[in-house]
Length: 270
Length: 256
Image (cartoon, rainbow over all chains, first blue to last red; front, top):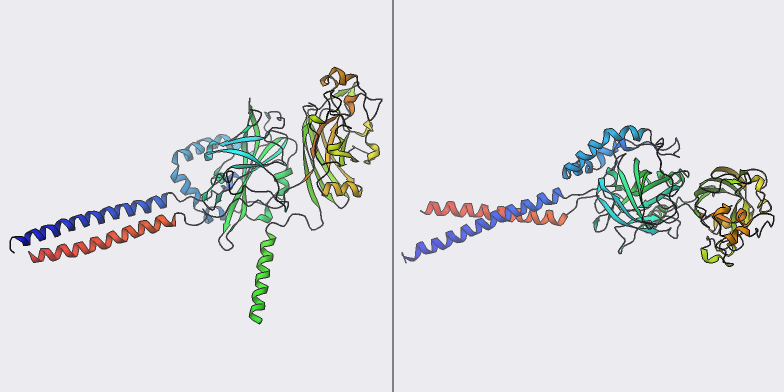
């Protein structure tokens, strides 16, 4: 009996140590999971008030942004900057050069001539890591713009086939989801674009139309959506409008606003 | 009874609220805006865009095009332009060239875009009768056109039901095939074929109504709820085990 007691103690101690080790591992893994979950929180980016810019063909009655709501509603912008410090630095470095250009946009004297009609096939926006195929979309039975439906194109960018093709004279209209039921979509970070950022559109004829952002705006309600400015604001030069959703209303469970990026053609690669 | 009635009213109100989301399409006065992307046809190389706001029978047309033939007989090249109706509401493809001269002339294009409903002249008559009056047509290689005109009911209906097509005419003769260069217009025999052949074409379509719904809100709240639950569970369990172990260890120490 006396011989066996220490052995039992030994087994108990060993089992205990193993349990402690397991618990410590569980603690570390648990904390790691929580940290990962916090760090990977992704929210739609909201345009900065300074990105409002100017849009040719815009009317003086265009609503002004309410500066109060941008920093308060989503804490997305600082979160995004934390997660991608290098990107933020590079765009900050770009700013001073482009700010003055943005203020007088539309006065750029070096507009390339408009391209003939050719459907867009691809979109690349380096500043927000967008690299997507583009497909044509039409109107729904109610006369509204269709949106990408569940299926292979759900997270792709859509081009409205009733608008000019990108590079052609007039406003070419593109849209994409900010998120879907499965999580973030192609334009989650569209709102963090700034005047001066580049948008490259590949076309079926092999040319690439390069656009420069001149305004990034948030229209906080669907009733303030600037239909005429988006689809017919400026008929005289090749421009681009990119639309996604914004301003989630928890009460009704829908986005009630839209973020719209306005850009103009600045280069063509053959 | 009262309660269920109240509930029904609330439901109806909610349904009405939902129904309002995709609405907001047409304005209260029935005004609606249409656009047409004007694409090059017959190799004209031009392009443009037209916007038409229709309120009752009043159509306010804003139009920009460029890249068309600039000169004709020493003067500005007249580009007659029309709202075509009663066709398929589309622009013709090159397969519409029945006589094989390389040009889809105005008549060959008619099965696609139909006949003339209104003339987009710079002044004076805007009826179909003014269709070939080159004196009141915009001239030169580009135009910035703005005019409010009255549409007859057939043309206004065609615009509203999406079967109206904008056609701008007038090609640079030097871009035509030799055969086509010798031909006369089948509309105005005194003019060459190039003068009346389509150069730009675009179907009128209503501007999309309202704002597109491009999100579900899956990233609007807290993401990865499952990860938080798992992590939290692990930490809690580990904490409990460690707490128990500490007690166990102290008791064995006391034993010794």
